[in-house]
Length: 436
Image (cartoon, rainbow, N blue to C red; front, side, top):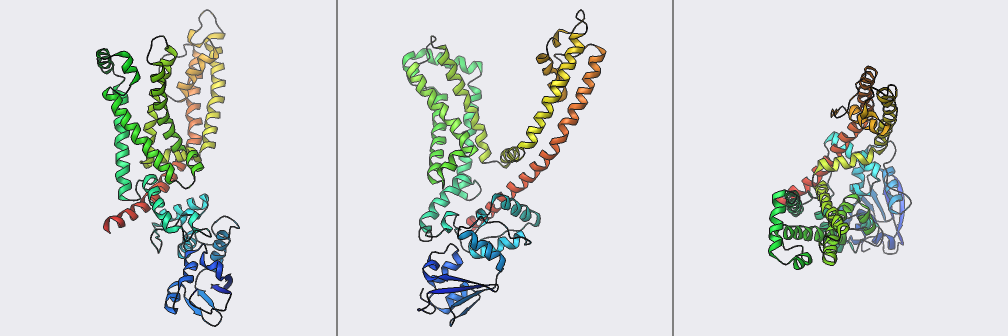
């Protein structure tokens, strides 16, 4: 440190009246950027740009900030716990302290991030860091300050591929990816049309069967499919390379869906190369058709670019208890009503029995379509007691389905506002980038 008493082995931080002593060696690579900036101060003017006041005699730096909040932040950066909001303190005030010291919302625990997003969306409040290129969680740990500039490029690339609204390049990349998904889905749907398959068979007869089986990409649809798969594969590889945690990257649901959508193509190509489409290998042919139809998972890739699909996935993740409760309600009611309907329609009078209700599993189908008020009409009760039971089944289904759906609906609205608010924060950074 070039400013202050050269003989002092430590410096003192006075934050809101609370004093903290730090050694000079620790100050250089301290996890908080505002504190580590003191190491490079060469004059009193530089020091006063970082802190509020400075005592040269006691080598003490004064910060007019919340002392309790700084205590929580200090425990976190020293590795003694996880960063959560201080008790009896406003979420926005604590977040303002985090920004002042050089942290961001990603350092908070997930539950506290949700509280912060709710609070910001209610008050329409936006915060931005004082310094551009905010560092990630790993870069605020000791020993990472010097490596920060080299990691900013990877962080920028990661946001470009992971956050479609984080920059102009991210939006262009997301638009191209959406176009590839739409094209692949159109080709998949068109390939099941009878005319399309007839034309493909005619083209196939013009070429050598063995050569075609060894090269499935010679058809126009195969070429388009190969191009789309190439784009998806390259995108997945780049996102894997720039990701911070490779194990966490593999465990994410959207990345698993990407793998499920890409892998079947390469498996089907290998199986076609080694087995061909020989009629004697019917089992392999069925496997190929199943693998090719798994391309429908590409539709779920749109969840990376649309808030609506993200909201649906986040809601299902948070409301899995309510979903299980809903399934339990349906299963219990289905067991009761299917047994009673089978007894009333088939078990009491065998001469005039309803053949559609010959068994309890057959009656379960009628119970499901009745409780969900679909009513296909393919099977229905013909006896008076059975029709009365059918009315009770329909009313019970409405009541049982409505009870947990209320909780799911409120969670859906909350998840939508959270994701919309996060997207708005990235859009602000995109607008600033566009103006600059």
